[in-house]
Structure formats: structure tokens, C-alpha cells
Length: 95
Picture 1: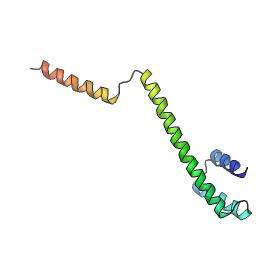
Picture 2 (picture 1 turned 180 degrees about the vertical axis):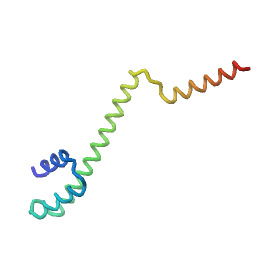
Picture 3 (picture 1 turned 120 degrees about the vertical axis):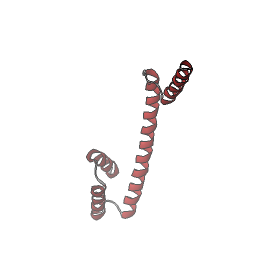
Picture 4 (picture 1 turned 90 degrees about the vertical axis):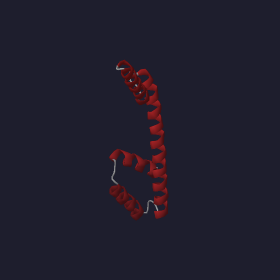
């Protein structure tokens, strides 16, 4: 329960590293968690955060790929191919 409450509080308050460390020190001082428990908790939270960041990145990439096919945009590679083709045609016309 304490871990869930801390995670909610951490996310809601968008704590700085210093404030998070101070909060963890307070947990240790009150005897709510030992140093080992705090270290394990922080390591797990960092790992979970990285996993969630990666999942979000993948989700955004997937969404972008779905949207870009529907939008009237030209990809960079398509643009470069068209640019090369135009230069080729201009060269032929100027001869």
C-alpha cells in the first residue's frame, strides 16, 4: 500500500530527485522502509519507468505510422526521389 501511495504521490507531484530522496530518507527515519527496501523499490521504479517509457514510445510510433498513411504528406525519401527526378528532367530540358 505504501509503495502504491508513493508512486501516485510521486507522479502527481512530479517531484525533483532531491525531494524524492528527502521523502525516502523520511520513510527510513520513520522506520517505514529499510535502506535495502528503499534501494530495491527505487531500482524497481526506475526499471518500471523505463519499461513504460519504451512502451509509450512504441505506441506513439505505431500511431504515427497509422496516421501518416492517412495524411497528405510526402516522406523524406519520396521527396528526395522526386527532387532527383525533377533535376534529371530539368537537365534533359536544358539540352
